[in-house]
Length: 362
Image 1 (cartoon, rainbow, N blue to C red):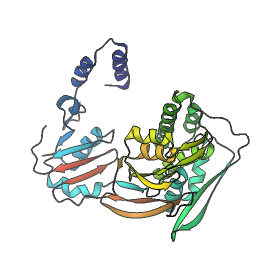
Image 2: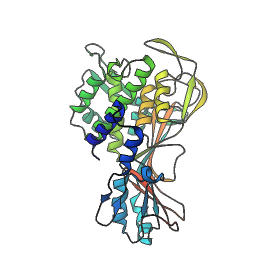
Image 3: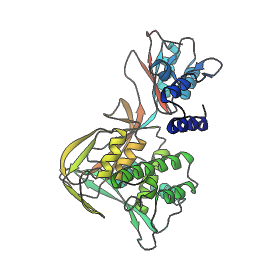
Image 4: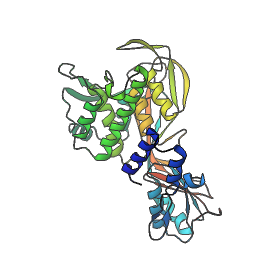
């Protein structure tokens, strides 16, 4: 089913021309995708009520990988049954480059950029790429700092406030779309701003298109968002995992005056994606709306650090001073699976877990 066909189907349901049950029945009859060596069922969960499944017996690693890549366009997990020895032996070479965001003191856009630079992103190259955005009146700089004896990068976007136009979602989309940055970077960056706009719209009881971006729409937020997405791209990161986020308390000041911490927009963002949080018992703001949107949009998974081989570690400094080190730690590595009876083919776009003795379905 193409996007246009799906859109028409949804419009029929919305207008009342088609009942929901009838639409589901139509989806259940969608055809399989024939790869020649296998038929891929993109709609198994609809038909059977079970997760996607690959029957691996008699298939090569390349064939299994192709099936999983076809199924995992939306980053879901696929169960693989009865994979052969070849698939197990090859699985270790298919691990994915992972970035684990250890947000023990929260997350913000400038902390993300500082941590990614500390983890290996070249500052001059990053700054040069960001010049492809049609934005003027700013200067990037960084400084090395120490908090709790830990060396970190403090990232700054110095903005000339004079001559900066007011910006809405459409304006920011155009700035990103008109750049010559990689398409993947542009699409993910726009998705972060859409996430911000939806949250602000719910808080202010309006539509995302009418949101006046205030702080988040300023030049520094555009640089923070696009720079973070670009930094992950430059590091070759294929999967982002975010730790549970600590919530501050009390009141914080913004252009609207005093508001509760966490900021209303931050909670809207985290609730939309069901990001796990906990109370940190710290007065002030630990997770900014921009940081929340980056975590919620770019995060593929949320929780503890997975089994992985660590390559690089970077620390990004926050601007506020707390009793604890106000740092974001980003750990770059390769995901691995230490379970003897399973395999984990971590692929761009999804994962495949295999159980050798499970009787599967075709």
